[in-house]
Length: 346
Ligand code: KG4
Ligand code: ZN
Image (cartoon, rainbow, N blue to C red; front, side):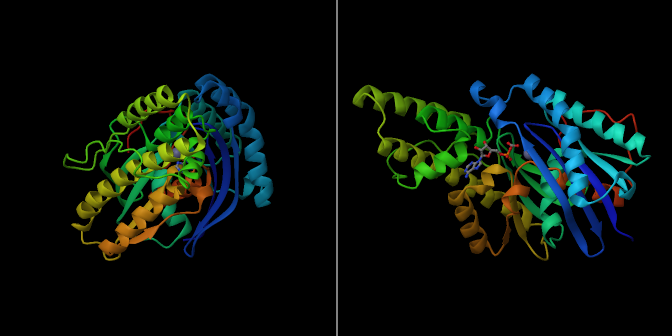
C-alpha cells in the first residue's frame, strides 16, 4: 500500500489542534503537529467554560490548520483525507471541528473520516512505536480514566474505569484546596516532592471491591476535611503542610491506579498476548510517582511499559490523523452527514 497523508483536527475540549501525519508500510511520521491551548481563557472560572471554548475553537481552527500545512510544507492537494474528532467532548467544540473538516473535505474533494477522541488516545502507542495488538491501555487525563483492551483499530474492550471524577480532576481540585496553581497535576507533584506521603491516610476507594472500576471523588472530600481541620488548628497551611497533603494525596491516587492496573493486567494476560504491553496516555501519565508505580508493577508482571512523549499523551491532532489513517486502511469513509457526538463511548 502507498503511504497515506492525513490532516487531523481536534477540538473536543480546551485545545485546538491540527496535524499532518503520513502513514506508510514503514510506520507513521508526524509531519507537523500544532496545539493551541485555551487554559488562560478558562483559568479564572476554575474549569473549562463550554461557550468560551467553542468560540475560541471557531477562531483558532483555521489558523491551526494553516500552520500545520505550512509546517509540513504541503497543500491540500497533497492530502489523502481529513480526519476529525467527532466526539466525545463538548458539543460546541466538536461541532466547530467537524464543520471545519467538512469545509476542507468538500472544498478539496477529500474523504472525511470521523474519529473517536478516545480511540485517538488509545492508538497513540502505535503512532510512535512498533506496538502489536492486543495491548492494555490506561487512559488517565483531566476528563478520562479507563482501562482499554486494544485488539485492533476498531476493537476496544473497556475493562473498567472511574465511576465519578477523573484523576486529573482530582489533582486540579486538590491544588485548589491547597492554594497551589493550576493545572494542579504538575504543581501537586512538585509540592509532593518535599512532603511525607504518610502524613495523612487518605481513602483508597473501591480497593476492597472486585474489578477494575475506580472512584476519586471521595478523595477531595477527605482532603477538604483534613485541610479545614488543619486550618482551624494552626490558622493556615504552611508550605510543609501543603507538601504533606500533596504527597499523601498522590500516594493514595498512585496506590489505587497501580492496584487496579494489576487487576486489569491479569485480565489482559488471560488473552496470552505474544508481547504483553501496558501503554499509558493522558496528561496524568506525566506524573513521576504514578509512572514509577506502574513501571515497577509491569516489571514484576513481565509486561513491557510504554508511555508516548508527553506532547502526544495530552490532547493533540496527530493522534486523530493517525487513528483516521487506521480507520481508512480498514475501509472506513464518512461523508457530509458525519455528526458530532458529545457522548460516544468506545
Ligand atoms: O490529557 P490532558 O492534557 O487533557 C484532558 O484532560 O483531556 O490532561 C490534563 C490533566 C489535568 O487535570 C492536569 O492537572 C493533569 O492532566 N496533569 C497531571 C500532571 N500533568 C498534567 N496530573 C498529575 N501529575 C502531573 N505531572
Ligand atoms: Zn483527551
